[in-house]
Length: 337
Image 1 (cartoon, rainbow, N blue to C red):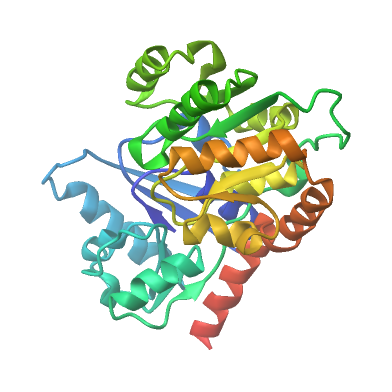
Image 2: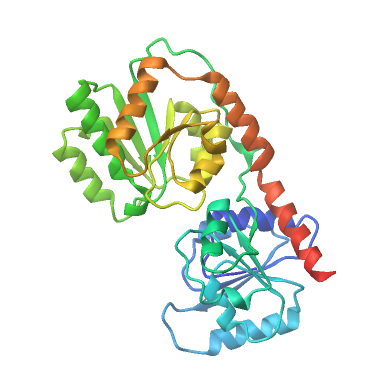
């Protein structure tokens, strides 16, 4: 595999694939999470090219291509479309597309295009590439601590959680705006939200909560390791995904695997995770009033525990990382026959 940096999803996949195959990971650029790197299975070879971002020095790329030539991989799986321009030899190249705003400039350089959702496949089809193959991202469902299903004694309070980098695309401000709607229009102050993650939007979001008078209803917990998230999802009454742009929605799957009810925007990617709405509650993307109204319905009607169990079963069947890794291996084999 070749990647600009290291992401959790890639680590999970290669750790599964190395159980039955020889796997090498090339990290092209010099920015990556060292702690995450250490979680890669010892059987996976990791090659750090250490190219400085924006550098025109060809030496790291020369070393990269020489290493590829010596390794002679059957398949080079890229996770950044631009990587095809720095692979100088005619190896079999495939690409995973992770979002619905990527450009098609480099797609023609790959033998196979993988898409993390139907939404992404539709996106590249609209760009003229109709042979995309959907391979869903996966999670370690067995590592997530499950919430104990029970009827709350107090149905008039909801403790929510939202996990993700603090960025405008992730829509966290909608939650704060919805809390203001609940407070001003419905006189509800018993709904709170913990934000897990870091990013440039931290201070603006904090200031927004103060300005709207809901600072006591939100907490910013910062970046937490995945072990913490998998252990603490069960502590919440509701998981909220307020994204403005989202190719899939892996954190939704994690919440479902923890048997936590979910409330998501109606973008195509997240909707796939909840079966089009069968396994989760939906609100209109970008609409804080719709979000607030959805929360009010949950306050008034309670949580549908049958839906929670159906969501749990659906995620277990479809989004475990073992299925993701196996599907990629089958696709590689089909290309090499």
